[in-house]
Image 1 (tube, one colour):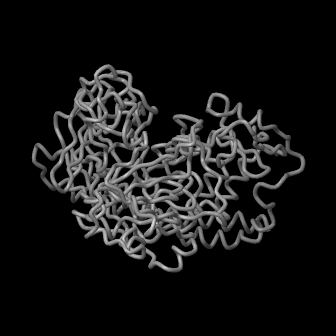
Image 2 (cartoon, one colour):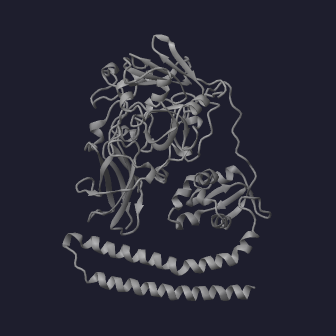
Image 3 (cartoon, one colour):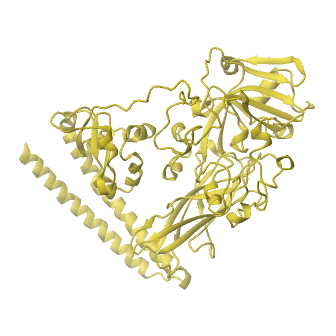
Length: 566
């Protein structure tokens, strides 16, 4: 049996070598043809890069064509052997047993990188170093890789499990359990969060996903959607829950709805929209001067598909036509409460409600499932194109009124000021509440401080761009010399079902560009991006110019500094 397997593998290698040789011949012929082409002085390097890229592509395709049939044949022959191995993550007799403390001590290559999966402990150090996406595994270093795999089902396959088990070094029997809840702690019953989230505060919990995962999916997985909480997450008994609709000063027209009623009585409306915190990218403003607010990076932004009943349908059921009503505002109130019993609240102008009446929804699902507790279970109002602060979670009351919401977060927070206003001179009454957000973009790859490969002469940038108010993104420009010269990035196609008009675009776009590095960069490169929306609003060049005491509305050019290995 062993002799037959060796002979088969030898034949495989021989046949693969023959096919690869043919691929090299094709590549060499193509290179000879390209060498006869002339490039202008400005495009010489681009032409050479295209040659190299084309050669790599042909090689990749060639290896794939040459090897795929052989691999499938070999895989089918080995299937019975693989089936006989143990199930991944189960206890394996004869291996050492480790504790959670042991695993947590191995988080970087210097100490070796360990992860767990069920009852298995794995040393993935060498895999991380040699795999193109290995750096993402470091997010789980010293902990459980399971929650990351739960988000991406493509990992749950025989080949991946087999590869993981080859890295097995031991067992773990200890289970990490949450400590008994402290009944005096108002945050003790908050939901469990995904370990990849990066907290900017724990009580209340506020966190963003790593930028390396932010653009991995156009629709952000629920577990990775940024979390913005102002107060403890309420525990809600769905049997007792009702949404109250109140007409200011007229109890006669007040009505209440259960979640089941909303689902059964009103047509379902789905909308895919990006939510962004007003403080997204605040960390860049903090470098200029201190501000009051959470130290958000550039990932306090996410996109989801929301399902619910339109606000217009619900109000019409209450006998209210927002096109004819005389009230000036619609107030939203949540069930999250502070120590003094006051609830989080916000409001939008009636004019905005009329403009968006077919898009504003009272949502009960997020990405096809009940809204998770951190994101507003059981109801949340979705007002596309607006700042996240107006899209109230745990929604249980809607009031039509001539007054804005009296909530602290409407009156004394989430407002913009010029860079010279400080806490001694600020007057919140003279500033408008933030509603639609300005155009913004950010570089997600490469990351700040990353080192490019040795002697690299180009770099590939990837990121997101978004603008509030339904304004689509017309263009994203990128630079590798700090903004002295620019090139236009490619806007990646949205999924077909999510395409929108440029003037009613509620969700972000992803973009990508490969650009040459400047000559004489001496190993230090400043990458920059800026976006233009459908009204040709463009990001300003400096954080200094948009600095404000609350650290909101930072949409300056996004800058990332990278090194080039020598």
